[in-house]
Amino acid sequence: MQQYRAMVAVGDSFTEGMCDDVRPDGHFRGWADRVAAARAAEAGAEGFRYANLAVRGKLIGQIRADQVDLAAATDADLVTLAGGLNDVLRPGCDVAEVERLLGACTRALVAEGRTVVLFTSTDPTRRMAGSSRLLPAILRMKAFVEGVVREHPGRVVLVDLFSAPVFDDRRLWAEDRLHLSPEGHRRVALAVLEALGRPPAEDWRAPLTAPDTRTRGEKARADLRWLGTHVGPWIGRRLRGRSSGDGRPAKRPDLLPYEG
Image (tube, rainbow, N blue to C red):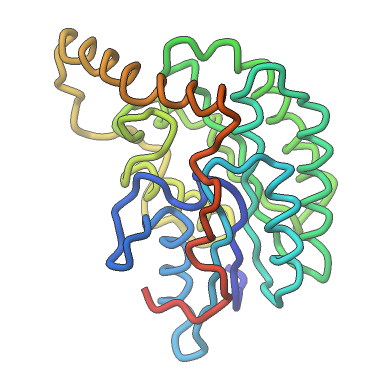
């Protein structure tokens, strides 16, 4: 595994770490923090620096405008980039424009010898009712990301979440079904480390060993809570042109030594 010295994480709520355990400073931990912790433990006395510029709710255009140039201006040799899903969730999304911006982000970040980590989205249709309309755009984005990886062999690394059925298990997701649970974040961190060449400590694709013991009635009640608690407010914000990340700063804007 290459010994990276510093990492900048760029993106939206997925990378911010929404719905993971809460750190003492009040921020969510998230898979990117978990990757940084693993790299810091391996770096030893040399140390490992880490910044996380991701902010929940951001569209790919906002990520390009607000985060990518900041990340490219650092001396980080590793950058993770995840974005575009918030765009795809919105009706009438211009997928070609999302692809153009994601490609521009990647080209800006891969300069000067950096390694860039990209992701394919999980398949929401296998766990979330009413999401089938999203699948054509998600499949198109998946093919685009895979093409970007092929264009930059050895420089752009792919973490393929789409092909991992373990993410069909709702226990890897928070109650809102859009953000990962702590176990989901842990699995993604393992996937990133493996993609970067770290020998796997365990199989992040393996299904959960304990069965889901909820009854059909319990699952139905959970569906109703989800509609009222999460779907309704999300639609309301879209109608008002608002985002959960409006005015919110990045949780770790400076590239500093990571100490866990």
